[in-house]
Image 1 (cartoon, helix red, strand yellow):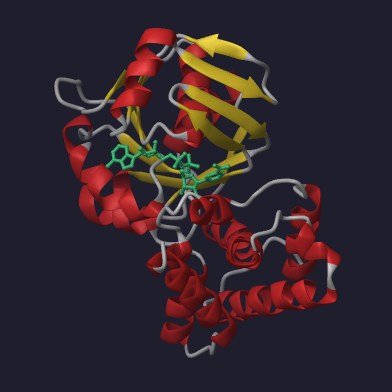
Image 2 (cartoon, helix red, strand yellow; image 1 turned 90 degrees about the horizontal axis):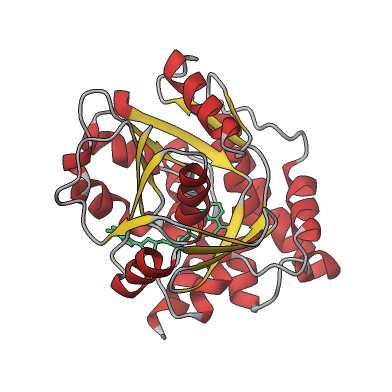
Length: 304
Ligand code: NAD
């Protein structure tokens, strides 16, 4: 398959590198010139759970000159989604699928508003990683990837994509509807990300204290009430317990929002806790806890 990965950071390199190793014609596209140069000259140095190796890859800072692709994977942070999709427009033809496995709410819809919703495949992934430096990524955790069409139908296209990923060693499955998965993953991020970034603690610390456990519960319960009002069925019966379990299992990890705050980068709070507030307003469910968390993160961003 001819595959372009737009946003070749931690996740883009894990997926793009692994698909490239499996024999697909992959191009990694990223604005960071030093990283692109390192990838082309030295290959992708991938370490961690899938084994330490160097994968020869092709990378570029611009889609200029590239042909239309079978698959375009958008792996920029949510705040860059629209810009990245517009830049990649020339790669997207009538038969191109555009996949997002980004965190948070609304990425698939934003991509669909630019390329047409019928081209978009959305999903969630349990893989995790960290960009260590130019050309170097640590594959921190692996797990299932679940893909689905926005129209809520199980199509041949999405089943084929899941098979391509699985054959490459990125275990994946296709489902009819991704909404419940996206919301279920959202609620884990709602409970962990902002709190770890505000408190500047690793994920596991949230489980240790009654005060932090209560804050996790309040934030996640609000999100669960919004989901229920929207008619979205979550996959975990007790989303608070699930969130705390994930925080415990990933104890030493620093959440992406905490990493962003440490590096003084814009966070994805708007599509995580901010999305719960926005969706809550639309369906008339109050979300004061998520509003406080969102405003605290935005205030931190302003003090950089
Ligand atoms: P990252 O910051 O490591 O990588 C993003 C890359 O996008 C950067 O290298 C940046 O230079 C590049 N970029 C920004 N704007 C661009 C543009 N217009 N065109 C091309 N490249 C551009 O981010 P990440 O950790 O890989 O996360 C990507 C997405 O995946 C986020 O939505 C994140 O929430 C989600 N996610 C991350 C993890 C994880 O463990 N890192 C796990 C699951 C989901």
